[in-house]
Image 1: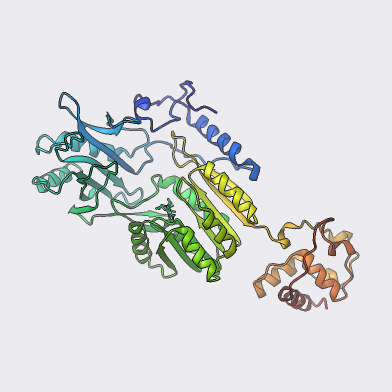
Image 2 (image 1 turned 60 degrees about the vertical axis):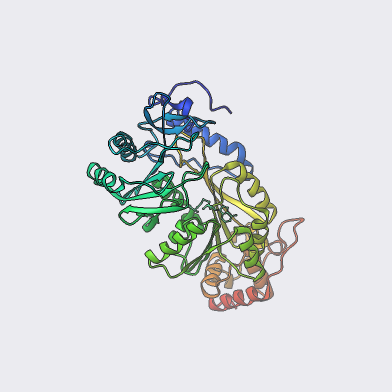
Length: 480
Ligand code: SAH
C-alpha cells in the first residue's frame, strides 16, 4: 500500500512536508491515516488473531513534547533554524510544525531572533567554526515545566548569564536551561558534557499518576496523551494484582515498570542505556516505590541469566526498539515461562517476526491493539497480549452440565466455583478436564468423554498438587 498518494485530503497539509519528510502521511485526513495504519497492521498481524480498532488521538496536533532544532546560516548569512532536509545536512527553516508543542516552537523562534543581539554565532559544520549547533526543548505535558537545552560546539559561552536572563524574561514558563557541549564531528545532537545555566537541569512530568524525571538525554515517550492510553491498555491486558511479579524489559527510564508497580507486588526492569537506568532508579525513589529494581544490561543476557537461576515472572512487559527483540531474549523468556507477555512495539514488521517466534515457543496471541502514538507519520505502535499455551488451557472441552448425568452431589458446585475456590485458596489454575478426572477418581459419576479430551489429543493427567487442591475443593463443597 502506498502512502505517497497525492490525494490532498488534509486541510492542514504542511507546506514543508516534501523537504522535511517527517510526516509521511500528512496529505491524508486523520481519519484516513488511521485506516491506513489499521490496514497495515492487519496485513502484518492478522495471521496471529483479530486486530482491534486502532486507538486514535482526539486532537492529533502539536503532540510532540520534545522539539529538536538545528541552527545554521544560509549562504547570504541569514540565521536559520529547523530540521535537516531528508537525506541531507541542509537545514529547512521551520517556525512551527503541526506535530510540535506550540510553546516549544515559539521559544526556538525567539532564541533565533535573540542571537545577533548577544553576538552568538551559529555553528558551521563545514568549517568547524561558530557556537550554537542545536536547541532542544522539552515540555512536561501535565506539569507544564519547560527545559531548554542549548547545544554548543564548546563550553566557551561568555554571554551565557545575560542570554539566559533575557530568555527567561521573554519566557517565564521556562524552568531550566542547560548548556550541552558537543565539540565532536558527529550526527548525534548531544555531547557528553553539560552545564546547568538555570534551574535543576531536568524537568518532571506526571504520567499515569507517576512522576518522572526527564533530563536532556533521557528517553521519554514524545506523545504523553497517547502514552497514557498505551500504558493503560498494557496494564489492563496484564491484569496485575499485588501478587504479580513483573519484568519490564527494555524499560528506558522505568515508566512501564513504575506504572505497573502501583499494583504489582514486585517489578524488575532492565535497560541497556546507563543514563536511562539512572533515571529509572531516581524515578523509583521519587515515587517512593520500594518494589521496583532496575538493572543496566542487555535484555537478552539478563533474561538468560535470570532463566538460568530459575527466576520466574508472572508478567513480562517488553518494549524493544524498532529492531525488535532478540532470539536470545525470547529463548530465555520461554524458559522463565511467564503466564503473560505484554509486547509493546513501535515497528509492526519486527513485531510480526517476534510473534512468530514467540508462538513457536508456546505462546498464543490473545489481543492485538494498535495505538496511534505518532499522528501524520507512518509509525505504528501496537500492544499485544500473549499467554502461555498450556495443556490445561488449549484443549477445548465443552461443558454443558445439563447434558451430564449429574448426581445430587454434583449439583452442589459448578466447575467455575471449584476453579475459583482452588485459585483463591491454593493459588492454582485448574482446568475442567482435571476437575472431571478428580471427580471420577472420587467416584462422582462423570460422562466418559470429559475425561478423554478431543479426539487425537493427548490427554494431560492432573498433576498431584492440583489433584490435592481439587479434592480439597470437593470436600469444601461437601461433594465427597
Ligand atoms: N519502555 C520504555 C522505553 C522503550 S524504547 C518507555 O516506554 O519509555 C526502547 C528502549 O530499549 C530504549 O530505552 C533503549 O535504550 C533500550 N534498548 C535497546 N536495546 C536494548 C537491549 N539490547 N537491551 C536492553 N535495552 C535495550
